Length: 562
Image (cartoon, rainbow, N blue to C red; front, side, top):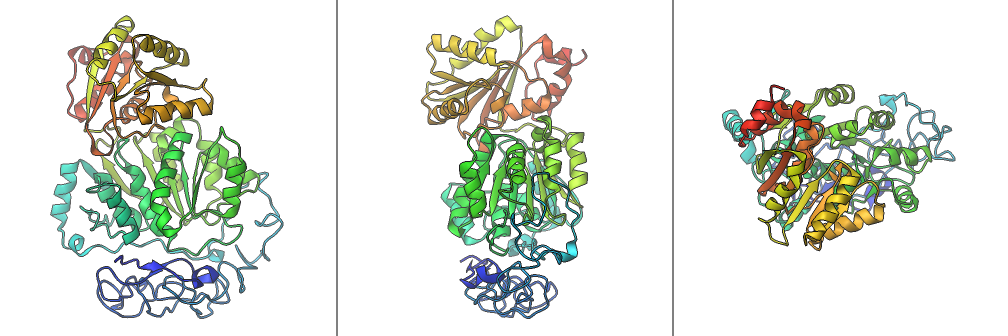
């Protein structure tokens, strides 16, 4: 059974929270997690009392808690009256997030006397202003949940270093945790572990092996890894554990976890994973993006969801309309951070982050590490762990075989047909072009050749784009021609080949495009047609190819001096 135990009982919602009790996975009815790090109680095999926050016996089943949680909400020194926060069935105590019994006055500080008309004080979100946070008035929250598995604690630093070297992993920071090699070693709760096995995963990817202990330790972290390397689960599974350690949402509360994504397609992809791994613990989520009516999103936000996956622009709309707030966000993820900056979302990101308490845990994930992302990290994060898989600047997935053909524009179409001959009608091929006109033209030409093909670009309505993507995923139309609007939004595990019919204008987009194949440890294949037009990028492309042990055509090597 999980060392996280079962969900807290009915008392959890009253004021203590949603934490977990129950049998210990590695010990005997232990108070598994103790807030007193030097104590002999709890831990891996004892049955001593836990001093974990807010009632109910820490990580164990029935050990008493000494943490305050009663009539004064989170800020009072009144003794706990149960609270159910970390226990299994303790009765409800006092006032949740509020200063008095029902979570009323003093919700976010001494100047608040309970919910105002818009629940967040006299100022509405019609004009978002930076909040001057007073940490002394905010509820304390727990974010360090990492208890190393016994096999991990026995692992020497040399063994860990050798493993990192073998996997191409670079780590930076103080107190770097030892990587976990298996799902069992990751010390995930049973409900998460079962779902991972159910999905057919055999072992963590390198970024998960190193990233999970970092995220569970509660520190800010930076993860740089090629697209398709398992980054989503690297931040999502720790998020589920983080949520289940916090107080239940009260009416009017915003989310506990916020994941920012650059595109609608990526938001939907993350939501799909949230649906899988959150169902067993009743963790609710919603995806917030443009191009669709707001009604369903408003209903979800106002009813209360623990996870919001959002594109920055649409989230700001909801914040300004008062449909939600970010005052309970304690776990923030900036996913595909480089892409969000490329798309010009930096001002929106800054506005959003200004609405989140500064002592949150912030995780930044990216496929590349340009200076703009580094600056954002310095401003939004504090003493972060850093983990890189591959080249620190820009890296491509080593599971992808990359073929670069130097040619003219006129030669590209026939070369494409030659490559398509090597694939069966059911193998998916994703072709990237530069323009919408180019997408339409190439789709028409391939259709005349007898290929089942569709396209996705900015001129298509959202409904038509969804239909084209669904037909591609199902295999009904196994060839999809796309502009960069779909570069990071397509999550199809069995894309056999990616073709850069038109070379992108920067090397980061090259990495993101080819990352649509070779996902989740599968072998991928990418073909790029390289013309004189992009000669200025030859040196960067050579570096990418060399860094992932690919064949470098002599013509490309000559161009690197242009």
